[in-house]
Length: 272
Image (cartoon, rainbow, N blue to C red; front, side, top):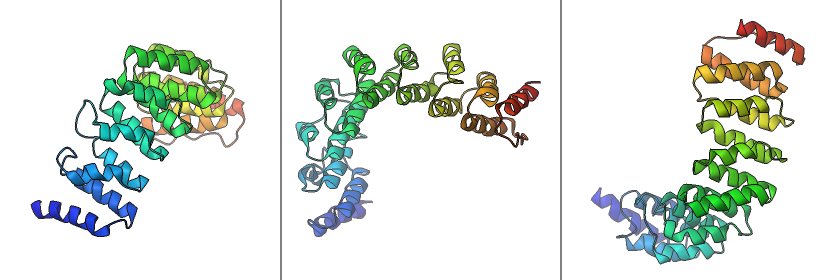
């Protein structure tokens, strides 16, 4: 192992300003063995001219537990490359660096949606009351995609009441985000919400609700799947059918027509 750790920095330096993708992968390999706190190469790479390399250098701090990040990493929240900015914001959330929450809050106003989405997720991981309040406000008043991202962040922070409220959002993207987020919260209230989604006007929302049931226990999931099978849109029906087959371990002869009445009768037979 010692000799291999000597080879990685040597290869990196030999490349100079060459292939940035290869240099980034070398940094990731090196970070699996040594800490950026002790390896000068990982720290100096934060100032590399190539964004993909800077991003890899930021990610090297990911597995060092929780706590504050050094200024050399935090300053990259203003990097010209949005993927680098996102990497820093994500890292703040992963490390629960609540002292840097103001950096994450500022990223909610980033011009790139991917950075804003990462910021919403990071606030959910930070889980402070201020972070939750910001996400709730954004879920109410933000633009459509920002509301959807806020709902996902609220789910990460355990604010499921706010996620339930998002089920009535006029945007199918927000309702879809809420349905997917509720996958990790199998309880009677969520089951009641999913029953409402069986006839949602958006097939994307219906299918998200079916997919969310994949890891639910049979006793809660199967009654809902049978409802989707008999009353949902065609894509939701076929997804529910496939999931029931997996759960029961047998082939279920589905109707050869898309007529809702045929699928309703099929679901009734399965209930019996």
